[in-house]
Image (cartoon, rainbow over all chains, first blue to last red; front, side):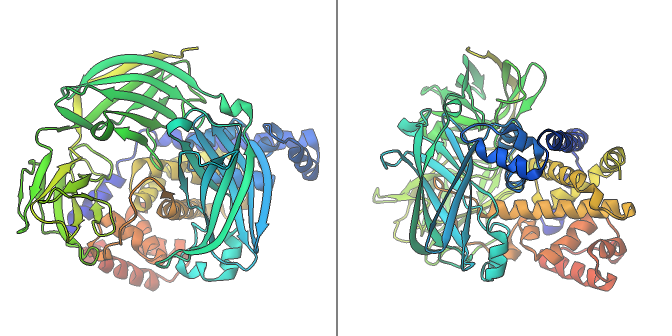
Length: 465
Length: 155
């Protein structure tokens, strides 16, 4: 595709407005009008803003309906802003599913204040601010500990401090001071033995560093630990919808075990048959309820765990169906991708030829990228079919002629993907292989083009309560 | 501006808002979210609009700020369980969406307003509060960086 073709395609896509657009505008106006209306009622109920703030501060470890409804207390406005682009958290805040924390700790001029949290048995979101007296670009690396100080197995999504500042601004203490104090959020997703068992007492551990967007993040040798008590109503919030049905997807057996609905996400738990001839590499589930409300996959953030090729099972994560949905949910699957196991291995030779490439992957000379120094760079062109997400096409490890296993994602084995999200568009995938790896290399594919299912899946499930 | 007038005028320009967001964010889901947030913010701030005649430009600017913030958040959110980031390739090797995102903001604004929002050059200049010549210069520079060639009469 030439640059001009890309341009024309992008403009054409921008003109294809979704059916949901009129409703989106209408709902935004209605939501804003509701918040204004609640603000007026709240002012009438409690009088002055000062009195409102005082009532709010007293409501510890509980919901804060009056204060949230007001929408004019500054710190609450920050909370609404912090969740504006996160549908599940936005719904949680709108329904007062928030715990007030208000804990502050200061060391060496750096102040960490944890203001709120939103939690359920498998997910914890902490809302905090971090400021520095000297206006340095301080950022945090958080982790979660149990009450005894042991690591809790959890993945973390973080890094919002100073997100609006570019490199020059991060080196300007005045610009940093203006930006610091913005409410940030860190999301923890419990895994392993801790999954589904968020303790009542946890410790937020955070390492501080300076990040001015230059090559190296400078460690400050500064860490914080704040104990958090999670309210019981947050730790027990789950609805389970048993499914227990097996369907055929592109000729492969797929069993949907159950849906788990949490206030901050929904999880579809599934598994495949070990006798399947192919791996299901793309399963874009969505849900509807009996009122037609639709719940889609996570667009920004962690979208699932495990996977067919690595584990033979997986969890696909969607936005939360906790609020605003009814008691019967239907699991839908209209598209998928299958990678046949027999044809998944490819041999790469020292002369940059390959054997065993499927017809939707080819060796490309386009978009040559310099890559990391010393890496042996390969370029693959890929036809992605109906697949709409950027992804890796190679499995996370490869083997050389001596049988030595290399990790695809080490410093010297690098990847870069240039994916278009237009249906049927090609994309180019660059891989740099370790120069110490002796040819021929055996790599395993992990991607196949998406296809529309001739028989879409629609499975109904009811709340197990 | 009363509520109904705001609602009517926001609906009337919804497609233009969506195209603008798409120029920044490049996918329908994020673009709808950005339109939702911009309309919400605009409604709450409607009393600050002193000249209703400039409603469309005003709401478009709110949307552009929402989009820029979203892009910056996306660029900095880190996952602990994914592979480390790779070095960024040169901008002229980027696909078009990424190349637009990597433009300096003053150039990106002109491209978005001219070709996604659909404003004329003079409307773009007025929306950004810059001379028309400056808008034309930024447009030429942006198109050169993106390696896009357009016919003279399209500019």
